[in-house]
Image 1: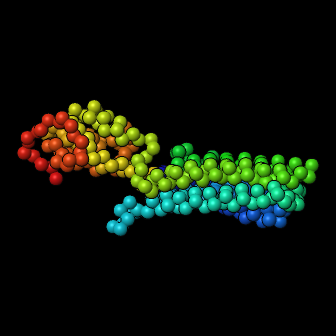
Image 2: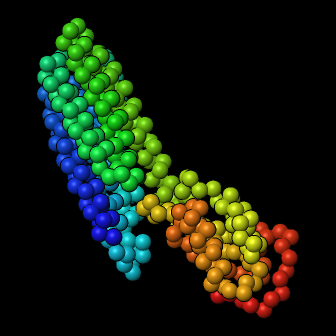
Image 3: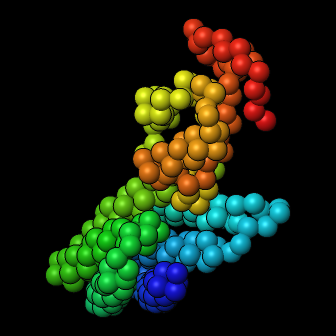
Length: 308
C-alpha cells in the first residue's frame, strides 16, 4: 500500500512540474505572439493551453481519486474531472475558431511580423515541450490514463512549436509573412483534433455511455456461456465514473445450492475478464416479470425462492 502511495506522489510531483513548465511557457508564447505579431505563436499558445488543461485534469484526477466518497457523492468527486475535460474541450473548439478566423483576416491584410523574436520564443516553446514530455515519460511505469493523455497532448504541441519555428525561419529568410497564418491554421487543426476527441470521450461519460472497450452484448453472452448456473442476463446497465466501470445487471439462474458462492463467481468473472470491480448483481430464479425484459422462450421455473 505504501509503495502505491509513493508512486502516486511521484506521479503527482512530475505532473505538477510539467504543468508549471507548460503554463509558464504558454504565457510567454501569448506575450511573444502579441509582441512579434505572430499568429502561429498564438496558435501554439492555444495548444499549450490544451496541454496545461490536460495536465491539470490529470492532477485533479489523482487528487480526487484519493478523496473518500460521501453520502451526497457516493462515487466521490471522480466525475468532476470528466466535467472539467468537457469544459476544456469546448474552450479548445472556441480557441480554434478564433485563430482560424484571425488567420483568414490576415490573409487579406498581411501584418508585419518580427521574425527573430518569433524564432526565439518558438524555440523556447519547443524546449519547454521536450522538458515536460521527459517529465511525463520518466514518470511511473503504471499506465495512468491521464498521464498518457497529457503526454499525447504535449507530443502534439511539439509539432505546433516546430511549425512556429519553420514559419519564423521562412519569414526571416524570405520575408513572406502569409506563411504565419497558414501554419497557425495547421496548428489549430491539431488543437481541433484533440479538442474534438476530448469532447466525444467526456461527453460519452457524462451521458452515461458504456466504456468503449466493453461490448455489453458480448458480456451478456459470455456470462451465460461461462457460468453453468446462469441462464439469462438482462437489464444490464454499464457506465463509467472517473476511469472506473460500474455495472448493474439482473441474472436469471438455476437455484444454486450456495447462493453467495454463485454471486462471488459472477463478480469474479466480471473482475477478471472485464476489470469491473463495482458490480451490483440481482439474482432471480423466476423469469423477470417486466415486459421489457425480452426473455424469450426461457422456461418457467416454478421455484418458491424469491431473491430480494
